[in-house]
Image (tube, rainbow, N blue to C red; front, side, top):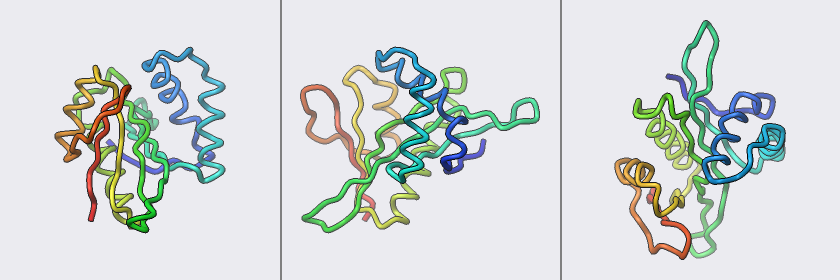
Amino acid sequence: MNIKRIQPAEATQVAPLFDEYRVFYKQPSDPALAEQFIETRLRNNESVIFGAFIESDGKQKAIGFTQLYPTYSSMRATKNWILNDLFVDPAYRKNGAGAALIRCAMNFAREDGAAFVQLETAFDNFTAQRLYEQTGFEQQQPDDAFLCYRINLI
């Protein structure tokens, strides 16, 4: 498995996974919207996306991705990152892709000087909760709709 940062011209590589991610969260499938959204975020430098790839039939096949958005802390005077999206194709789950994507995201954030990475997940997404806790995230005070996790980097 290879993890790499996705560039704007490579949006098509992870857009189908982004569409599946949206469907998982009860949104209608819209491949064109997914591709446009990913490409725009990358082109405008509004997010950072890492993709997990495997070799399949002599080509690189995307099996997962994570998307991070920057955020800032006035009190800490730091830039931080929100791990907003994490998705692994169901056929490739339980092989370490999710954990590898999270580690890559944390390394990126740490190298960027971030104080923390934060994320949210649904109350009933127990698989994701286990993964986040196994990779070092700690649960924060939940809000009405999601559980919040954070990992301090410094």
